[in-house]
Image 1 (cartoon, rainbow, N blue to C red):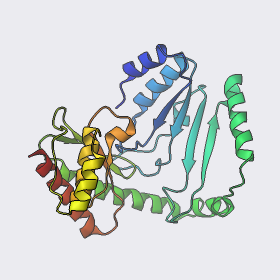
Image 2 (cartoon, rainbow, N blue to C red):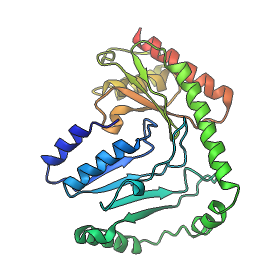
Image 3 (cartoon, rainbow, N blue to C red):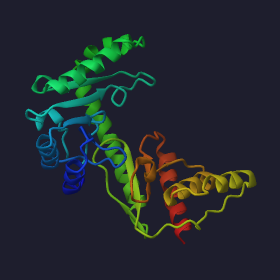
Image 4 (cartoon, rainbow, N blue to C red):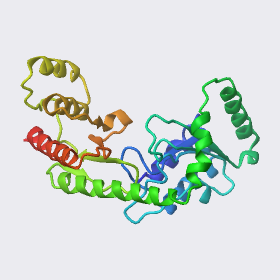
Length: 276
């Protein structure tokens, strides 16, 4: 969960900050912000005359007993922008259509001017998403759509629990079970990683390429490169998310049950080998 006191101090002593961005459900951790945390973030924004940008693209992929909670339910009269879309919900590969919901636009003239500038810039674009837009009322209005969302969320819950069961007992790491989206984060304990650890890479050309890439790289990026070279598994280091903790993010998107299980088992083996 975010450190609200730290957030408040950053805002208080930096006049250039005009908005707070949150992703709920979160990428890369799959965390769900409870109501009290969202209300605290809104309180900070209200206190310092900021608006909130909420990325809710994963709002219908929620599980582990949690429910979707939209920014509009806690925002009150604070200004906000909510980013939504269909790409994480539709079983339609390649179909991209997103939109912004503007909340309390008339409550602040500066915010209203900012929104007008966004609309003006969008009118200059010529990329149309007509077909996905036309599909939205047909698909989301279909009586079968809620069951589709529920079934999909349950599928990701099962995959998340499978991954946690394989990855959670490795010394030197910390794995929190996600409650939303389709990501899982493995975090290394402080001091576990260093710039001397390696994995055996039989292919000489690949090994040389990895050795070149890890020069000066963050410790978690170093592990990610070595696992890619040694095991053929691609993940994303937490340092790539401007995070101060070492770790990496994996997805829960693999549909082949055996391949997915084997992938997580291979990741677990790679961590143990790397930390040995």
